View (cartoon, rainbow, N blue to C red):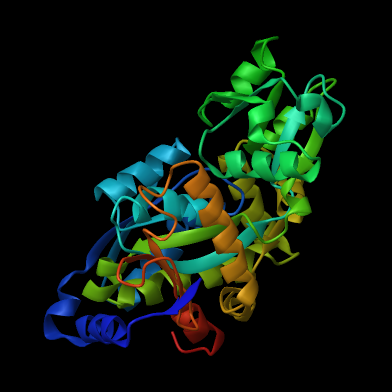
Amino acid sequence: MRRIVLVLAMALLVGLWASPQAAARSEFKIAWSIYVGWMPWGWAADRGIVKKWADRYGLSIEVVQINDYVESINQYTAGAFDGCAMTNMDALTIPAVGGVDSTALIVGDFSNGNDGIVSKTARDLRALAGERINLVELSVSHYLLARALESVGLSERDVTVVNTSDADILGVFQASPDVRHIVTWNPLLSEAAALPGARRLFDSSQIPGEIIDLMVVRTEALAANPNLGKALVGAWYETMAIMRRDDEAGRAARSAMARASGTDLAGFDAQLATTRMFWEPAEAVAFTRSAELVRTMDRVRRFSHEKGLLGGGLDTVGIAFADGTVLGDPKNVKLRFDPSFMARAAEGGL
C-alpha cells in the first residue's frame, strides 16, 4: 500500500526551485470561498497583510473570493489560479485527478463539527433509510454522509442523493417541503440547524481529522518561485496570531470575518469552536507528518475510488507525504503534503 517517493523526482523538484529560470514568475492569483477556516484569506488581503508579505519577497499576489466553492476548485484546475482553498478530498478528486500536480502548502484546520447532516423530520440516522438527501455530490459532504450511514449499518444504497450546489442548498431546505434532509458545512450548517424543528443528526466531530481544510498551490508555481510559499505561509500565520487574540484587535478581526460570511461575532466564534484550527505552525507540521494523515487519505481515496472519482484504478493517482510515503502510483504523484514551509514558519525562518 505504501511506496517510497522516487528520489529522482524530489531531486528534480529541488533542482527546479534552485534553477535561475525558476524565479522568473512573480505574479500569482489565489482563490478562496466562504467557510470559517478560509475567511482569514479575505481579511488578510483586505488588511494588506498578504501584500506586506508579497512585497517582502518581491511578489504580487491577488486574492480572489469565488462565491461557489466547487467552481473555485474548477477554476484552479483549469489554470485560472495558482492556489485555492479546498479540502483534502476535493484536492485529490478534482485537480489531482485532473492532472494538476498540487501541493498542500498550509494545513489550516480540520472540521470538528463544521460539516454535518441536518433533518426536518428524522430523529436519528436510521430514519434516513429510503429518503432523499440533498448535498454537493461527490464532495466532502458526500463522504460525511457515507461515514455517517456506515456508523449505523446503512450505506448509500439505502438513500437517494440529490446533487445541490452550496449556493442553493440552504434556500431549498428553507423553502421546499420536499427537501427534508441536507448535508452541508458552516455557515450554512448552523443556519439550517437553527430552523424550527430541524435537528443535527451527525457531524464531523464524530470523525475528527478526516475533513481537512487546506491552501493548495500548483507545484509548478512553487517551483517557479518558492517565495510564493513563504509569502502565503507568512501572511497566514500573522493572521492567525491576530484573530485568535481575545482583545480588541482579535475581536475586530473576527467580527470582520463574521460580517463577510453573513453572521456576527458570536456566530463566527461558535463556528470556530467546531473547527480544530492549527493556530501555531508547529501544530500543523506535526499533524501533516503524522501516520494518521496517511491512514485518513487512504480512507478518502478508497471512498473516492468507489465513487469513480479517481479516473481509473485505486492506485492511478499518487499522494505523497512528508516521510516519503506514497499512496498510489509513485510515478504519477499529483497531490503532495509538504510541511516544509510551515516548518520554516515554526522555526522563525520566513
